[in-house]
Length: 292
Image (cartoon, rainbow, N blue to C red; front, top):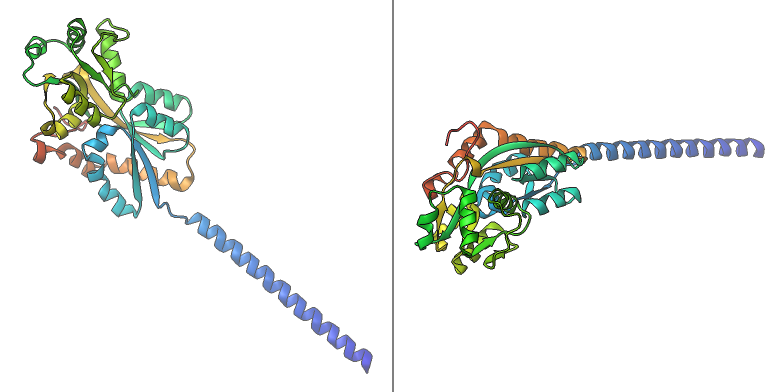
């Protein structure tokens, strides 16, 4: 009788253990499946867009990103730097996508394996500005950009450079080179080491000449004692491109692809073509299907 009782008890214990083990395995399997599903459905909540200061100073990004953020339930954190520094942040993994304007540097970035591709979105022009009503302005207005720079250097006029390896600084150095001046070293040449808006303010205060993109100048001209000395021409074309970063997580790659597609869309291209017209009387940027 006792033997039979012990046998029954042992069977009961084994049965409970098997049920518990099965339940635990089911729980682990369910937990693992839920974890995998959660991983696959992980939402991107923030995107870091590193860009040139001109797109920030003009208010362009603050205005045009609203639609993307609302449609995708995502926050785009804009970090405004010179293009050189923006590309370095891309290399270090501190950017998810770039919106910059220095073609040669962008191509080197991609060749180095840091970027996937560059996609031209829009353009405007560089202009040379100087102190209002300065007597030298009339002498320079019909000159080419390199000849304006040469005139400034030959006459030791005050000039303020971005001096920050930005797209604007890169363009400036190329114009000096075309003018036959490898390194500008005249006594009144100054480097600001700042963004475009701050550099323009510095030039205004110093009564200096400066290379700037037309968009930032138009957006801030009411606060400046500067005027355009050298108007835009094809040699001063300034192209803005979105550069996609290599080796992103799949979820972030998908979101940044959506951001690129957003700026390429007909709706946003139309918004770009109209940006600034109401406030400044002319567009700050042009799309590639337009004729200036």
